[in-house]
Amino acid sequence: MDVRVLPDREAVGVAAADLIDAAVIDRSERVLGLATGSSPGPAYAELIRRHGQDPASPYRSSHAFLLDEYVGLPPDHPERYARVIRREFTEAMGIDAGMVHGPDPDAPDLERACRAYDAAITASGGVGVQILGIGTDGHIAFNAPGTPFSEGTHVARLSSSTRRDNARFFDGDPERVPASAVSQGIATILRARALVVVAMGEAKAEIVARLLSSDPTEELPASALHLHSDVTLVLDRSAARRVS
Ligand code: F6R
Image 1 (cartoon, rainbow, N blue to C red):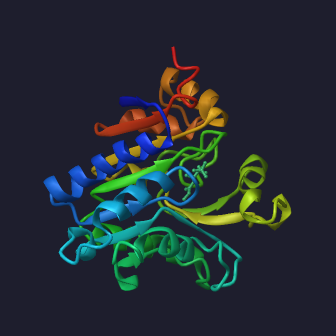
Image 2 (cartoon, rainbow, N blue to C red):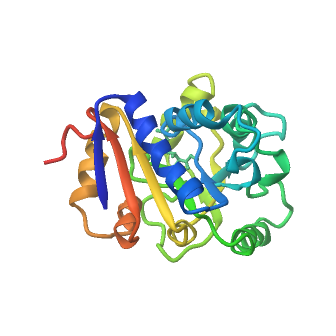
Image 3 (tube, helix red, strand yellow):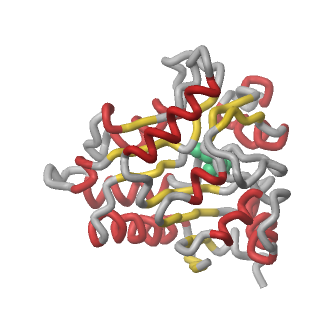
């Protein structure tokens, strides 16, 4: 795993945007894997600054696949990840809504919808570059500790710590954070050709240090990243503080 430590969140955004541009522009990848949450924000802002106004931007002809989607929020809820990603990234990048795909959390048969989502990713040619954040409990997407690495897209229960962490998007009330989500599995994530993982802030320092000192174990979902051959972990100084 390539680890880069940058002085602040703006520099993290520039470094992560450089890695995504390298995939899309230099390697002509046309399938993006997009995370929501706070970690990708500076990278998305930098990509919008670089390419948002360019009618010839290769991003405009790229597909995007979301990592996950809450179950139980109404389709027009502002925290539905499909809406968040449109608001925070794809619209300003000029990526047509029809090119942005997410797991269907309203399907009557969720298991079937999960299989259909993995099949859609495969049919697109697979994710060329996937941006990821890490939860304080070590989750990637919504794969909580203990999730088998072999799982594809599935219905995931959110741990109480994740619901507490995400309460900031729900008026500070963990009870209002949905209890489950449809999430790409570790196996899905590891099929992406390149992974760009962002962690910022003191709250991530402990999990980043654990990740870097751990062998792959299902007790620490992010440790699955050690099994991939093209992973860059982009940290700010606070998140890197406990790395020895
Ligand atoms: C979001 C996602 C989550 C977040 C993680 C970190 O689509 O899948 O795994 O990446 O919870 O969240 P932030 O970046 O808000 O600290």
